[in-house]
Length: 572
Image 1: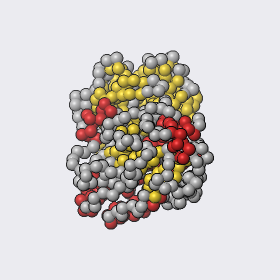
Image 2: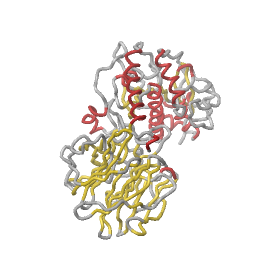
Image 3: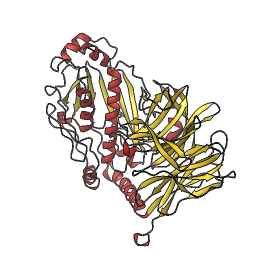
Image 4: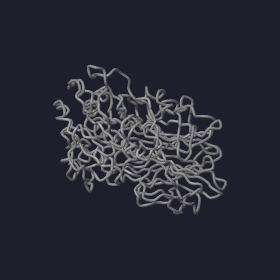
């Protein structure tokens, strides 16, 4: 693709002279369109540099930074929060650590972010009036100009202090486009789970913004039309309103700009009241720290005779339960009827070794369970034993993310002896891989690790015309980008002719509840789903959380989480 075509693909439909823009924007950078980032002190934060470096290395664009002046100074309590995060959590990554001069080689921050080979920025530091193909505004300083401006907006403009103070469980990130004629639209949006630290919240949201911006730029450079989205909607658009009251705490914002606008994270905002933010954050952080020190989660399995339709958590009463001995827990249950036997497979986690193993029990006709039997072992962590039958053969897709591949196991002696049959996808760190058939194609849904996003927030899909591959990534990956509904929670099942996908809601805490997402449209280029229900653990199950549901030939099963006090070390 020529530089002119690339510049045109970045430009919106407007009257501006594409030839002039292309000539001016590419005169000093070897033919690639120039992207200018508006940042404080002309120094690019790590999250923006990471995004644009990836495209610059592929020669899709060149970029530089425009000096937007000194950033606003944070209040003392915010600086203390940042100091504490750097010392208490040394493995965290500060996305807002600024790089060196824009034309020099960048090294990563001192908070433990992985090193990168560095990148060369534009041939010179950009000026605010330099011609370019696109301006990216990360601090609210790009005023009206002849070029298109993409602005990254973080939350409600309080730099996430409002969200954390009122206990919001998710943080919103949006990417907006402002055309030269002043019209605006929302191009992309995402959310991420809210931590207890303001510094960590800002950093986590910025890394998510980095991945979102890179994906959107790639699609724009490829000539794909970008949607116009409604701001502040969840990526699960049909489910956002119904879930909002539980995924995010309601309440009026504590501080806004005087003109009512929601500025970007780096923009100057009204001074923050330190005590109004510090105490709620400190109390919640101390309470969670105390709970982690004194208490532990205990997971058990509960099942009953198979029902029809969506399970109702208010009336779903277990007929049988299986609890683990102290120091272990049972979770991620899957049912499989094979060779005249119906067995329940699950993860058997050992808290002392911090490793999961696979186990199973055979179920009698009345649902009673036999003894717990170990399933084939491995030297690494195993969980989520997704079992299924294909052409009379029993298979399993266990979670083996430590090996960075999705493995297919075949039963040698059902149900306890299994062997590796083949590797379905190699070089991929994925969790909760779920295999199913839909519309004459075979699919694998899994949450894939991205160092810029938490593991449970991005769902990717892979398809193949054959049951075991080769596999092609979905064109819209990640097809779901939201902590409220991305991670798989069991086998998809059919209700009233519609395919329903169980999904985890991990906002607030892990193992909160199960959501049921109807697959409205699924093909290799498009994905759409909508929420049709949920399964809450505080109903008839009477537990603190659940994160799995499976329906077999005769039974249906869930896992349930309770909290109990830890035993003292000397008593174990």
